[in-house]
Length: 305
Ligand code: HEM
Image (cartoon, rainbow, N blue to C red; front, side, top):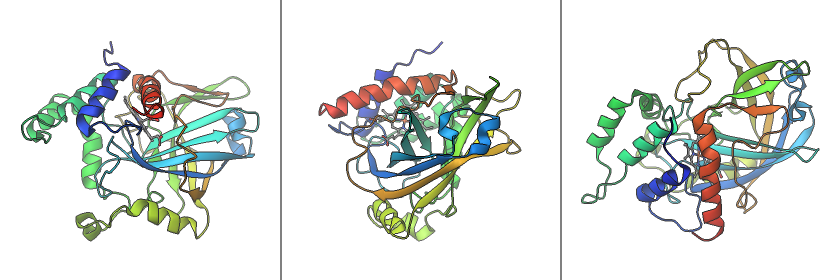
């Protein structure tokens, strides 16, 4: 049974990253973007959602650095985030809220909260205690795969040169009512590119916003939406476990980012459980936890806390 609560995550983020009034308590550093989404009609086999009608819908989004530090260093070996709110023609909304790692940092809220608590800086040194973190990971092996991925993968060279992963399972249903569990992911049409060794050692300051603007000056930045189809026995409730690489993947549409900067995303809470009709959440307890935590962060930051 889960005992971690949304407010415990918010108070633990404050202990790790400090209090930053008016800022997002997670993914504090980021940039608003806008553009459009076009669903792939061939998905009708699996989904009757109007998201996949083939119509073009406007989106407001945000690229971000994970963590509650609004001044996070951009060579950090931490996840990057991409969130999007798509406005369908019928007034419905569809959110995507994704990370650049193919797995999440823990199997459930309790394990994730314990990991965060183990990274709270030590009162005397002012720094996290690496031995404490290592001991926690050893006792909770589900926290290791994401750390391994981040250690071996160069941080993205730009927000547009990395894939993004939804990590949770969601259900689609088709016109005959058949259900299919999927995970969604975004593949960058430009390809993936990491920072070079010298950029990692001596990163240009705040290059992510600049590189994004430079890229958008050349035309739309595109990502392909892909849906990975679950098969019998797949872990549907544990985002720390990757699905087999042999899984069937179907095309879901295309994201086209055309503008960056400004404040359009400021008053959006990119709650991952805001879904267009025909798409439903799984019972992944981390997915459920996110709605409560994001709502607290949203309320705080819009009221200057
Ligand atoms: C229990 C686990 C998690 C907690 C407690 C948590 C907490 C938070 C909080 C408090 C925010 C700021 C929300 C706001 O002020 O609007 C945030 C942002 C974000 N989170 Fe999480 N998160 C969790 C898991 C995840 C997972 C699994 C993903 C991706 C699959 C993710 C992706 C993001 C992204 C992309 C943002 C930035 C959204 C934006 O740009 O506004 N988070 N998270």
